[in-house]
Length: 195
Image (cartoon, rainbow, N blue to C red):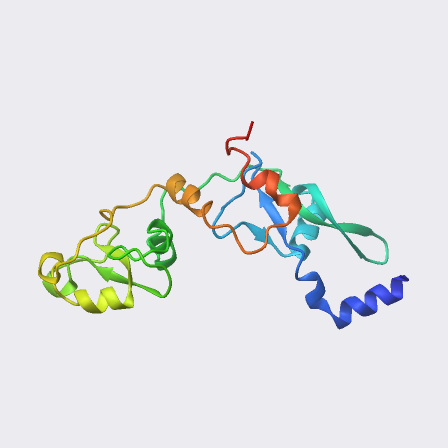
């Protein structure tokens, strides 16, 4: 394929290279996050490599070119400077669902989740890690603004604030739909090896 053909194909089908994200690892070779997986678009990875902010550990077969340079698209990059992970976990809907493993805390079902106040707000319940759980719509409707005892329901586990490392590890249970072969060695590097 000639340079001009590649450039023309690339301009016509920019989505073709959207499928080349780079896994971003901290300076200790661990992903910045597992869920969502720390990925950069290929453009960001190339820019970071050009600015000498990352080391390229693995590459795709595809090449991008400028008038003066050509570079294989990075598939795994490692930050040169260590980024200290956050200690405090933000109280967000996403983090709540991740803490509860994307399961209703009343019946255990997966799927269309919402959240529920264990002690209803109408009864003075507050919106906090200790009082909010993931719930499916049928359980949430069944419980309504009643106490657990009045609704005849119980929790699978008591709600509590998750530690940052605990939430990061929880994310490892939910790999994305697509894992490039070059990422696998870095995603589960501390998993027990098979004999």
